Length: 282
Image (cartoon, rainbow, N blue to C red; front, side, top):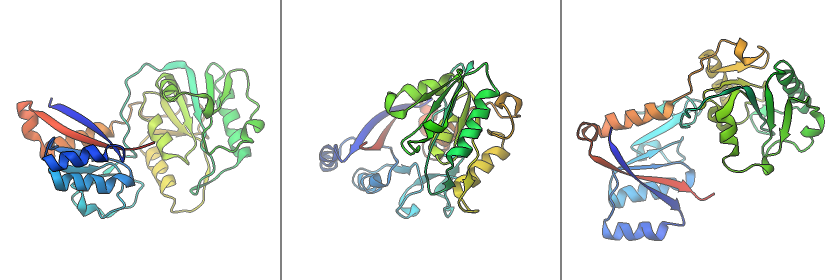
């Protein structure tokens, strides 16, 4: 296993310090990793001044040939040259945890350009989910895009609790997902779907009608269903559906690909590898 030294660069807050590195030719990285359209140019400028390999964790808004590698989710349509690797969804680190069979989570998105949102359809499906598993304590969690009047439609039984996103802390949801044996998600948020899949519990999709037949998110969901990674709200309780219970580990596969492609010598010698990670300011 190679040793890795990581330096986080927050753009634009650290721009001045990064420019000083350029002038001194200091802290030359082996690997520059970033996600977010605002980081594309800073990543490329860093490579121009200091060298290293440039890996973008998304479909870039700049031409892909400018980067050494682009890790692009399958649902994003992109030309596939040798420097593009498709991933099964967004990269989320797999979490090792013990799921509690009496804990469950329902994640609700909201209005989006990809799916028709219906409070009535969501209410019907959520009620069915919590009622068909009365032994499970459910937390129904909304998001910024969830219509404000949805909670008025949901008359939840005693084994379910509605949680507003404003009433939670940053790490609260991660903790809930790590303990949940069953997680249901609306398909309008790819990030929520793939975050749920990074944990050991089973994952199901609450049905929404896509706005277009060529909907890339809907195609991604169908792909996950064909592979047995997610269940359907029409298929009954998740334990009764024949699902793959192994958490997605695309981040590990992609890390191995990078190491084998460029840094196999580091693996052989155990030499330290220097990496710069880019982050947008939140």
